[in-house]
Image 1 (spheres, rainbow, N blue to C red):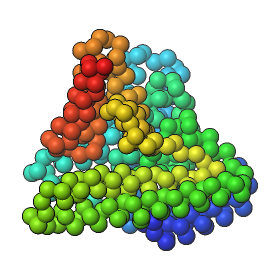
Image 2: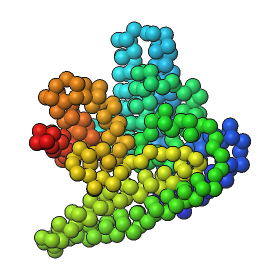
Image 3: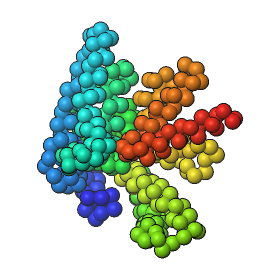
Image 4: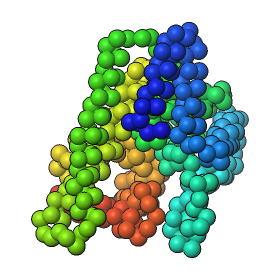
Length: 341
């Protein structure tokens, strides 16, 4: 079930009608039911569903443990050890999937068991949630089913944006009033997402796929056009999914953060990464770059931290030398920009 399938919008319409028929304090239950239904229909695999469910149960238990240790003022080294164990355990499927991707001989183990739907996105969402509890930024959600809703909210679980608990939770749980202007805004946003998908992304994809299918038949300008069209296709396809996600969420009075802000109008590489895949960039900044020391420990340390952060970004996209080099190149370009500025 994709964001452009008829089945998806039958589900959205059903949840939408029932959501506003239910009393406000129970409306979050409809979102939970819709999210669970979407995940089951999209996966169609009992193993994948079981893996996702087990991850939710384990991470929920760890979140309560981290909360209790913080409230009881447990020794800092014990809390750090608990957080490390939490990250390793709850991120293990993601880490193993990346490891098997990096080792050709392990490809046989890279089965569907290791690749639950939305793995790359919900793992980062989960790790930020647990880290924020450890840091005292948020309190753990004690209601397991509300926690499941936060982790599985169906408009964004596959393509993001990667949400923060403190920004999304209140809209999810409070039960929003029906608003005609809000509904029309959501529908317009969904239609705009369809336009981006079918009229820009897919059309650019036709050019790219045609040239890529027989590269020996094309030379010079055609290859350059293919490269440009590939960039447009990649951007527009991702943007369309996020736009549709925002529109569907808006139908229920829920705001999802922007993931793109006209990135191709950026005047520098640094600005590009402030406007491209914004939620991922913010996650990498807050949970890798800043914990490493950010820019507070001198220029050389700042450049090292920047390199590590962008290499991590490359590895998140795929484990290969190409992605490592791509991530490192992004850091080097920003360093040169700063030095030349």
